Image 1 (tube, rainbow, N blue to C red):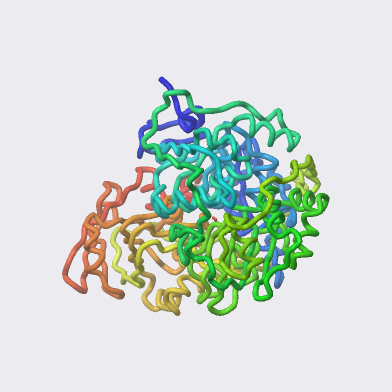
Image 2 (tube, rainbow, N blue to C red; image 1 turned 30 degrees about the vertical axis):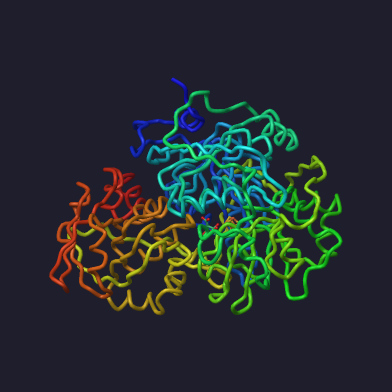
Length: 639
Ligand code: MIC
Ligand code: SF4
């Protein structure tokens, strides 16, 4: 029977379960990655599991998110991460070496392998024909401990790319077009597999822009075949031996096929405050721009920056615009230094930032009040930039650079610049990647005072009576739940402190309300918890006593995180019941063990009504919930 690419890779990694869409399967995980904003918690959990040396083929710990170091907190995390990596057999990519997804793509991703990472943009490595999935830190820790990773067998969508990209457009416009068509929840439960003649004009970096931002569709992951373009990329990385050809069989069957005619694509922008709020750039042309930021794991490869340099060549950034450039890796930065493109940026007036996430996660460069910021990033969620009143637009490097010069939103299709870029040089230098210690027993774990013990949770009580402490609309992101930004990120290893920021942009004093009410339930609309993989968005509410989330639907990673931290994920059997609940209504679950059978009755004592809630979990999930979360479960069952 002919197989698609996803079937080929997944089937060679399945350890249990039936490969039928929607059914749980367990996968062997070959590689893991973590980054510093989620890594500390992941490794604390790994240590709590009593794991001595990681069991994966390769595990890498990156430092790329929290590098501002205003205060000792981030540096404490870095020191902990470096020591724990050395002790437990993990490679450590030092701060300055680059953004995890970019470095992983360049140095480690391999065709046909599985990778999970404690960051939602882990699917970037799908550009290298890996099945690469974002997960909570605890699930990554479990994979490092050699345990399989559970997903629901996905539907596979074939995205067939016809034609070739016209002047002014790039890979960013392909993924924005998909977001326009499918929305931020259009990918839930699905893997997107790319095919067609359009692949020939897409380099690995461009493919990576697409797989990276597939996360914004809510997809499990996205994947490209491994072809000659992949081989050439690996040859430039001096690891051609990692290449193998990998593609779908002819006649392979898909659950759905979507065709995109690249010839007809035009430059697009995702408008505030959602990556699927997509409009053609020409409709926005002329709007005054205050800030332009080029970088992030979506668009900071060699080609992205060379295209932007082509547009900026010999020009100066408009007087009202601040332009920042953050290369994705030290490797890319070095190439730009050597071929002179960095000078082009500096001469144009760009402000050069570190090879890190930087403004993408609100670590500096917040726009001015009511500012218009064009970013080549992947997320423009409300508040993420650090300025609540700012409007963030997600665009390609070409649109970004053209608009920076003009000072207004500019369609690059109408701008004269060269589409050709110099051949990418070969430059490999892994000296900023530390190997694990050869004498692990001698390595002392360094734990600064900001790294606090993991918060504990009680086992699930047989019945629950709590107030609806907050009622939220559709598409609440983890940036709403556990906000991003320079003020909050230093406390990723200190949940007590972090919990004081929960929902701060939705409801002032949320943490105090939870304290006064003795915890509570969260009520939400569709796609609750979209965006980041940060398990802090489950851990901090758990710390505040949240026992259940009643939503119309959940984003995949967040639902797994809720279960891992012992919070019941319940969905309305009748979505109209959502309208019946008001904040501070008293909600009662008389028998929480109903969750095991898939449906729970919730009584609204304030209104005298009741709702049937679905609890779509596996028996294994129920065990985690019953123990009050995965760590309790691991501790209790190990004992
Ligand atoms: C993001 O882009 O939102 C982040 C910051 O990279 C997160 C991880 C985190 O919150 O630490 C993600 O994508 O998972
Ligand atoms: Fe970093 Fe932004 Fe990529 Fe997240 S999306 S990993 S914050 S660059």
